[in-house]
Length: 167
Image (tube, rainbow, N blue to C red; front, top):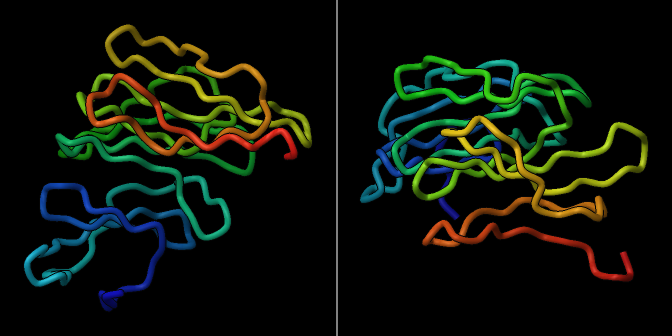
């Protein structure tokens, strides 16, 4: 474990020399990071605000080219947003849903995300958003609480956690 000297949670290295992390106010920060030194080398800057919080986590993903996708909004209905490296935000899905845990494919063309039901106790299914076609396709259908983890290195498969038959 290496302490980095900044407060926050849900840290991720973006592959381009920065660490991203969230804070309790729903703001996502980026700080320059040296892999060799395993240290933050500059002041963190805010890159997105209004991210959905779940406990001590924010819902976001970073593509290999540095594109950021995150879930904004309140406790239930949220929006799926893509932010490029210059900070330009694009609303992806036009309707609000219970989006969560977006993960960008290795080629940067798709986003796997969970979408849940609206009622209390409803589960989540995994959906894939195609950035070129602007479409959402359902990947799982049981709504039993799937959780998106990521993509296989070749981008052909989505990796997710699913509860076993005992719950």
